[in-house]
Length: 88
Image (cartoon, rainbow, N blue to C red; front, side):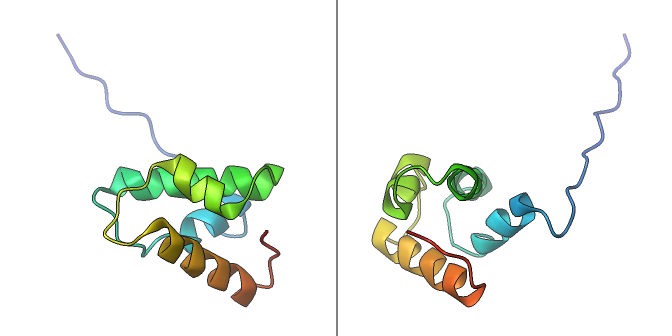
């Protein structure tokens, strides 16, 4: 029995919305990396579709962190303002 090598990962462009969204949450402390990945994905979906509020996005991501959801929303909102991106 042989094992195949894992599939390679295609990196998205450094200018892509995905990189932007994941970059906004890259240094938010979470219990596990997957918590940060879920938060980044939910943020990307919100930036793409603009459904709901930023507070709802953070809550729906189920992020586990020592920080409160309100603190995380504040950090993301501040970073969006710094990047001149509108957040609701």
